[in-house]
Amino acid sequence: MAELKVSVVSADKEVWSGTAKQIVARTTEGEIGILPGHEPILAILAIGDVRVTTTSGELITAKADGGFLSVEHDTVTLLAGEAALK
Image (tube, rainbow, N blue to C red):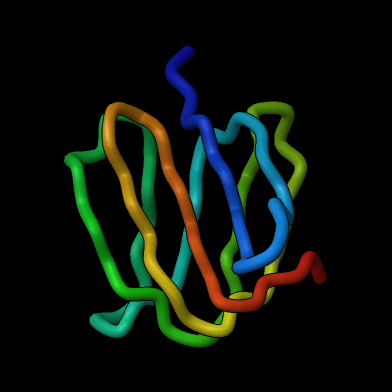
């Protein structure tokens, strides 16, 4: 089964990292869903929730205050000025 390697990072620490089967985040262009095999993308995060569905089916939710989302080769990095798990 294909999976995503995910890192949710704030300016001063790593908030969460692990493997996931899906990510949903709010960008300045609207909400985006990321699945394994997604095309490379760099997007600007809007203030809002980032929802990560882990490979075990657990839902992790983090609050991000803006930043960037990068996807390349099933590696997803979300970098926010401030981020925290909800």
